[in-house]
Length: 131
Image (cartoon, rainbow, N blue to C red):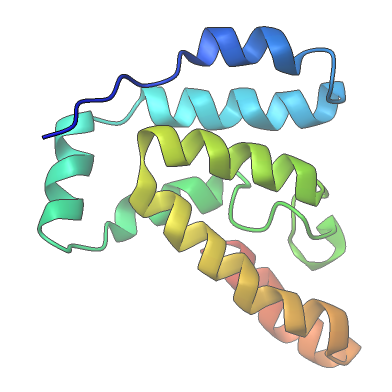
């Protein structure tokens, strides 16, 4: 079995500080903080057992991570896609099930945001953003 060592987030962070805005880095820090509060053993077990952790998904949404690239007008977090990518990259290192869930979640919100009527956006995006 191939053994790999995780990339140190401290090493990556030193390289990131010069490349991204303070707002983008705040979202990255929020993702790190969220991931730090999770039990790695629980995350691995739920992934191995193919169990969707609705509690973790809803908690991530409550922290604004479920609608990061959308404006607050529709319940979003008024971030951008670079922030969303940084969050997903952090979650890919530490909690893949949440990364996958949030990625699909935003993917489903995007067509409503881009092509929906104002009534559709008002109806579907705020509850979706909340999880």
